[in-house]
Length: 394
Ligand code: NIG
Ligand code: FE
Image 1: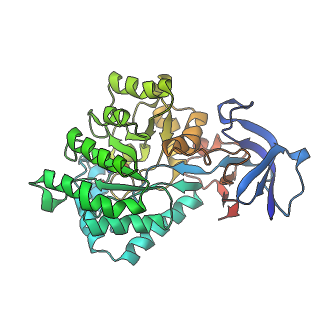
Image 2: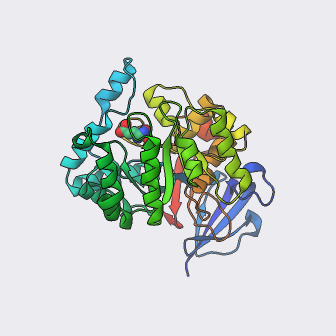
């Protein structure tokens, strides 16, 4: 059994708050032993056990890898012109999704695979060791199934988003499209998916259609996530809570009742519904940012994710999202780092990632910096020196 000692860690963020170290469970002058892809031991560097190999962190900060719980990587083409038009004053409506659907349907499997792998690699180099990937730009039985099969080649966290928008060929018969999604499309998608998601928004799916689709997914064992309250107030967040969703995502336009509903999932225990905030989308659509403080102050569990997609948020960078959350959403650096690691893990109902403690997966990053604060303090700087996934240097 080969072991690896990550040694001379100036600041180790564990997110293991059973002990001391504040909300991030920080340990100073620490070492961490990896065996068989898992964390085997954490302790003071001076007590470090012998190991087959040693990785010297040189006094830098070490954190759990980012858990990006919301990304749309399976697509073809880009929408740079749409972005430029927005920056010149056009609003974002989600209408461009259909442009990407056309390009995605026309692409070969290998073209889609190349894009997924390119973006997954890009994210990995920025510290993302777990990445959820959605379908949703195919919107036919065959295109949704192949999107998920390709996503599943690089991630176990795959999400069926056949209900992204109603495709043009069903524009005047949305009920028929919902029937397709719940029937043959779900049957073809489910073997490759862990989750089901719906874009519950004016112009996409109303609450009755969204509820029906999510219930069909639950009936075949998929976990629920919802694109909710992105472009305006709406029923998505409360629908997610009603169905025990692992996460409701965007949460840009919330009422007090939405916040209360989310907070109640925390109090009840059992099913916590996480609010996943996606500041890359507000950045790229020049929209007001979600009110993270209101959620945190109400006791809601908050995650941060990229929403990486060619329309509303073409970034794979979790450090960028952390910096936005701190500067624009008034999260503290500690809250933002937690939300981008442990929060993402909660949003995926995972307890083996987003945390560094014995038994957890050895998914971590070494920064070119002495502290997690630098992720927000030095925005736009490539601070991720080394990434380990399952204990293996990437
Ligand atoms: O999460 N809101 C719906 N879906 C994506 C946007 C997709 C697109 O514009 O292509 C989102 O922002
Ligand atoms: Fe999204």
